Length: 296
Image (cartoon, rainbow, N blue to C red; front, top):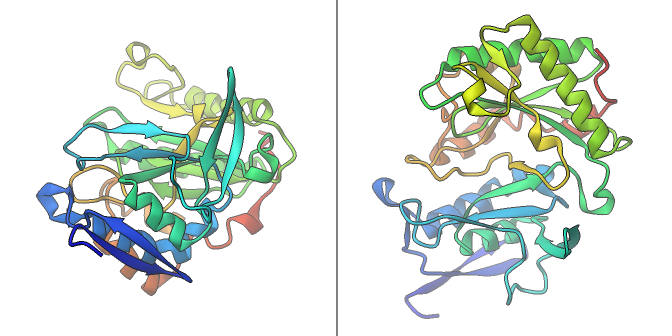
């Protein structure tokens, strides 16, 4: 193997890594090999959340200080052991890769995919989502304390509506509140149920919260975003690295941890594996908690 290549053992496979010394996070010294190694090691928790979900790859061929692009179609030349699913789109179809094992996550990292974004449904029943996502995303420099308060109240509203919510830092600016669902409703029903919950929350706090899509109508309020619940929309994968300085990670958290979070990028690439070893995966039982749509 040339000096410009190496390989990583991931499960039963050895996956080629080209340009392993490429600096994906130049200011932090995080290389492509570091990124691939992280994804191999975090696969024990991450795969259970990513398995069978179509992926949109957020790729950075020159690291996070270069240009980024999203790619849905699986690249030509992908190894035949990478599973994929063909999905309808306007005017045709697109074949998305799936990350069903550690080797697939390492392969994604070798495509300079820093952040995999996932569908809320799975390949065998694409029309029936099993996740409902509320994205609490403040404007740049927004009040993270408000994000935390809103997430905690939203969790209470969802529990009162018959659901079991889960929380995750996005590794960017906000928090996701996620509801696992039985696969009985279509995207339109899931979206409308999420919108009803979000609008109820905004009615309670009209000076602080909004469901307005247009930024010029938010007037500094926190956007309770449910748009990720529509067909073909994606959300950052649990345990995915984000393309921001320091290598922050979208990290599932326990509800009792939320109040103590300092920021949405509280956890970094070098922290998460130790956290999993010490505390386990807070979302380990998320699939078992799947229930009906919220009915306020």
